[in-house]
Length: 135
Image 1 (tube, rainbow, N blue to C red):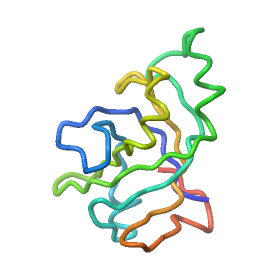
Image 2 (tube, one colour):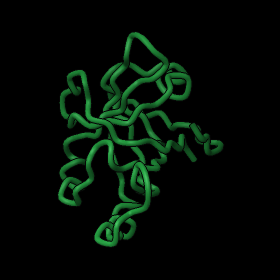
Image 3 (cartoon, rainbow, N blue to C red):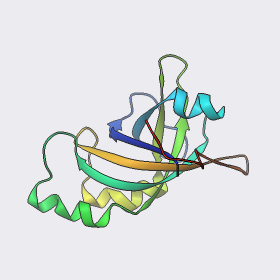
Image 4 (spheres, helix red, strand yellow):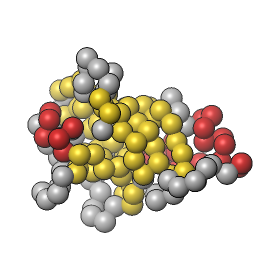
């Protein structure tokens, strides 16, 4: 159970948090930071459920992505924005190192991710442990 999002990867316009690549997914504050009262730099853990092209179908040479990317664990670092309705979850350098050789580029691919845990200051919070929430 967790927070399931389907989002296009973006390249950051603001400075990425320490330990993160400059690649992020947006998440509405009402489902994550505001709902669980999470601060900046919270680590958000989850699992990749699927990967697709942002627009159109995967090319033949990209079919490998469907076989090797889903099921992988991924860690993000939360960056709160003071304005707007979204926060950004930046892909951790550790996670990105496992995926970058596949040629997954911002604006070209979207991920379906099940976000299950938030970790801050040694404390772990389960995200929506009673049911899956689609956002």
